[in-house]
Image (cartoon, rainbow, N blue to C red; front, side, top):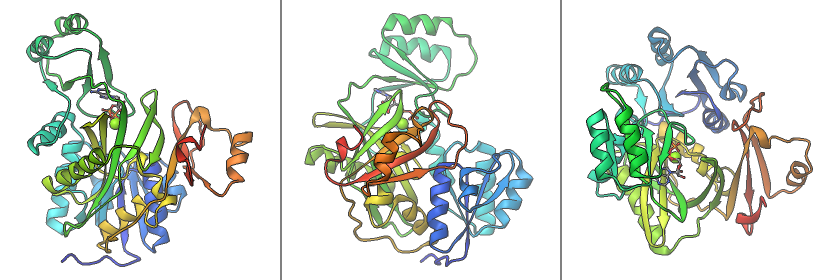
Length: 373
Ligand code: ADP
Ligand code: MG
């Protein structure tokens, strides 16, 4: 059995954006000190009360000093450079620092080819995909792949960044013939003509105990999550299949922590898209609709506090507030603020740039799918 880290232990988190902020809010409420590491000063997490180490991810001295002050470490995002992930892993092995999820799991999630290969190895369905690591693989994919298809960077993509859609074989051949002989790190995925997108938020602790919310339904706008409806409206078979797939993944890679696993759904068929090794934007409904939120689950797993046997969530929905939707003086905001079914979560960011995630609304009540129309 793992020792329980009692308050006021110091919980560390790599990153300091909104997910770090919401982790810190829960951890602080539960009596823990939180300490975040990122290059950003006065970050969303710091503004919510976390201690802040401001240094580049590549600054190994600063990172080591930071790790020495922690009782446990988790992540708000997966794009930690490899050298630093190795450093964290070695430090953890040498000094017994608790790091959940394990660096191995972070490595799987940060690289689309590794990730989809792991899904396949576990017998979980994915789109047909072709690793493109050099010119000859690109040329071979011209013939092998069914179009339309999407070419993606294997790492560092988010909100649809680093993706190009190719409508036809000819269009892709034109690209493949134009590239040089240097190494590439891309993946070509056949386009899956889904009807719906879904996600499952799962939490698994060091003893292998799992808690998992029923699948949610997600709607994107310009490749950015816009609305989540919980629970999603899927057949019982699809719901159970997605939940079982999430459990198979968590057990198959010995995952410890919270993850969000994304799916595409068409009729009675579902396939896995990708997973994020941390709380997920589509799990924010749990802050107001469930007794224990995805961020509290993250704290509980990191500290070894027990996971709930059940944690039902009420019908709810979540609407993201992007820079262009940031209208605190609008009538719409006043309407939501005057209605106790709506809860506002702002991230403490001052510059409402286009497509920047500034906050979100949660709605808990009847007809959650139309709460933001
Ligand atoms: P990220 O979220 O890291 O930017 P995703 O792989 O989740 O990357 O792609 C973003 C969105 O693009 C998905 O939620 C989906 O709407 C669409 N998309 C991505 N891959 C495919 C695919 N193979 N077929 C159909 N749609 C896709
Ligand atoms: Mg995605």
